[in-house]
Every structure is written in C-alpha cells, then in structure tokens.
Image 1 (spheres, rainbow, N blue to C red):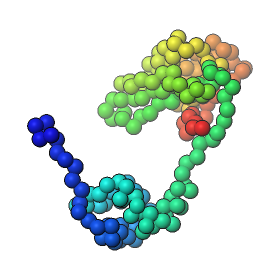
Image 2 (image 1 turned 45 degrees about the vertical axis):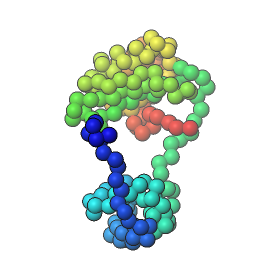
Image 3 (image 1 turned 30 degrees about the horizontal axis):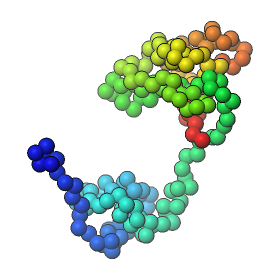
Image 4 (image 1 turned 180 degrees about the horizontal axis):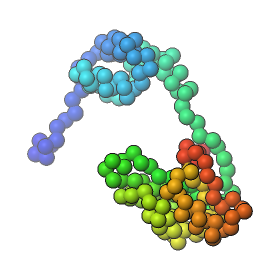
Length: 183
C-alpha cells in the first residue's frame, strides 16, 4: 500500500465509556447534534472512530433525541402512475453551479427509469429541451410532464403543449420539491 501512497485507516484507541462521555458532553453543548455533525466535532478533537461505534454511542447517550430526529424526516407523497410514459418528472440541480455544472434529470414516474440525466455547463431552456427531446426519441413521448416553475423549463412546456395539446394538462408545474417521488 505504501508503494501507491496509500495508508491504512487508523482509528482512535478510545474505550466505549470514554467515547460515551465525550459524546454526552458534545450533545449537551449541541442538543440538535446528529451523527454527521458529531463526527466532525470529534474529528476536530482528534478522535476518529468507526461509524458504527459513533452511532452506537449516540444511541446509548442520547436515544430520545435520535428518535425525535427520525420523526422529523421528510416523507414524500405516495402516488401511483398507471403505466410508463404517463408522467415524467424533470428537474435541475444547481448545487455545483459555481463550478459550471448543472445536473438535468428526467425520470419516468411509473418505472423510475432515468429517461435523461446529463451534467451540463449551463441552465438554458434550449439546452434542457435538447436533453428532454433525446429522452423522447429514446423512450417515446410522455402523456404529461411535471416540472417546477423555473424559466429553464419553458421550452419543455412549449414542446409538450405543441405535441400533446394545451387543455389536457400536458405540463404540470409546482414546487421543485414535488417534482420527484419515492415509493
């Protein structure tokens, strides 16, 4: 491993009791502290432990708060789509836009198949339409498309209305958080 510049992972030699004491102190100072934040704080103190040990300690020390955080999870709405190509979801992710990366995705609501997934260097309506059209050419025209209200989806909306008609709900817009679903 040394030949390739790799080193063996080393973890701190700390007993469960000592780890529990440190975790308890951190949870006292940061009551909303979850597993990831706890890992970072411990790392700042020079303590590196396996994820399973950290999780077990957190459950021993602060089980009530762990359960409370579980209850606060986001639950997506459950819905049914009759068959493929009835409803597609389109959305873009801009978390990497400062590095000129925009992720465009289009998912079939029935099968959860990625109809289009592309990393782009812009968020222009024409570019997104081209990705969408590539998906249509590969998998067929959907009956309806759900998207957010962003201006980047205008050409996709125009395309759907042109191909499927205006008065039939060919394009459904709403909040971005409703553009995707999990069953």
